Length: 115
Length: 394
Image 1: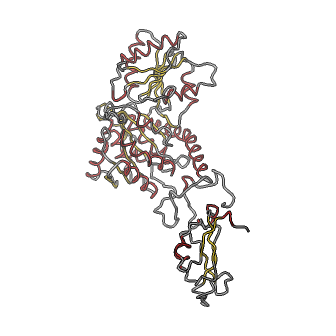
Image 2: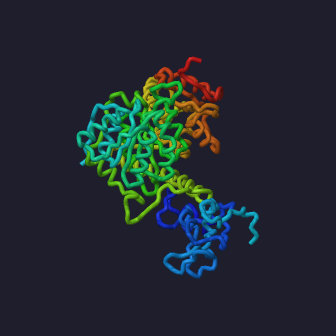
Image 3: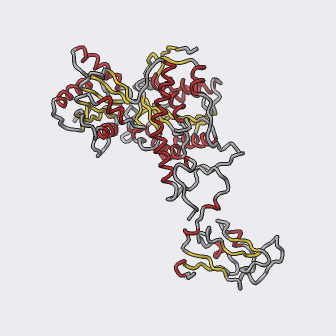
């Protein structure tokens, strides 16, 4: 959940957000019931998952990113590679898995995952 | 220099005149009887260049209130007016206005809700909004509608309140009847209502703000708590605004206003135009030596339960009149509030409830006198039926 919850006296009235760009503080990861699992063997770092993610939860990794796809790896730091999923924000919608042309992402039910 | 002007006007014209003097930034409205003459008059002011208002003729009341919400969030002073089914169609956005804490002022010309379809007065429309988070002011006549509209702006926009305000007057009985009214000059009103100083306006691009974001189980309740606190606090602000405006007009405004109340044993409580009818009945009965009085409710939300107890506790019998049916309720809206306010009081009058005047059914002094007759029985300790109707063919 989000950081320390504030009292009714501490927040702006009317549900307004007066500090722009704070949606990063709103953690939506616990809405998720299915988690995207990435297969580096199949991944070509095409970044279509990054493009289609509605929550900007696909991270961009550099040339040395340890979770990057094994194929099509870019050494250009400006282009980037697959960098993992931001699980604090990923809601588990599965759009990345649906859209991946290489079937490199599969959705696994959270209760099946042992950490 | 305060100038008082005496004019002959309908209640609707009184509201329009108040709006002209307020000169709001945005007015969005859709015609509905009996509200139409307010916007008819106001649109003439717009056409004549008497106001600088952006007048938006929308396609429905839902859009009228939506446009007011957008305009108010942008930083404008926004107003509208409606009646009956128009208010019902606005319903969703009525709650959004209060929940977003937008100080919109709306004249409601009370009219019965369908079905069956009816264009005449009762209070089922605004009473249906009693828990919508809007402050509600009621007006006995056109002059009060004028005064309430002016005061509503100051109440709504107070930084400790920031809640929308409904100013109610009776459809046709008040809105379409010409009476002599006392008004203030433009400069005095301009000085009283002041410049609008919006809080977090959307058009302030240097301070970006998001209106209406998703608000779930983690904060929605806190925002509702803020609304409850603001509504409670508004009582204090209403008192201040009443006193300040009273110092200009030389009159006294109150949450509950008594007529011949001091020594009254039998009291009728009501709101809006029936107060005038009851006063006429009281004048006749007082001549015969009957100790009868009236308590007129000017403010329904926030409900001033302490004052209502203070003003009624010396009475022996009280009848609360309601121009709306609370189907299946144990007495209707105002009655419930007042009866509940007396729960802790050791000394309380016998109290009964009348539903009257639905769909514009005439309420005349004879009915008021009949109620005082009924109260004689209550006064003598026989409460009888708690919830009654009057003026209907049983």
